[in-house]
Length: 53
Image (cartoon, rainbow, N blue to C red; front, side):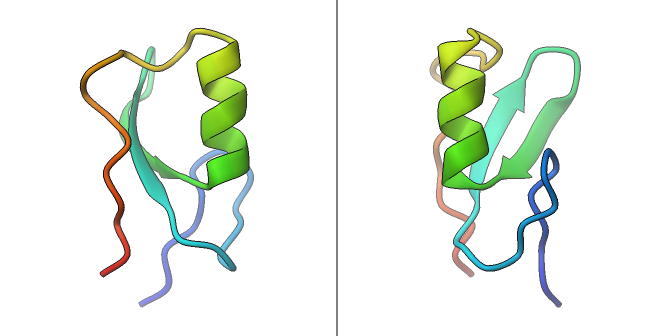
């Protein structure tokens, strides 16, 4: 089973778990994770784990 980034739908990279304001815990690609951090949308201390399988 292939997982997709909850933001952009990417499947070709390891995903990170992020607790996003308004979305809860989701899997996101590194690019979207960085963008969400810059926009202050990730709840600090509850994300960043690798879902590499």
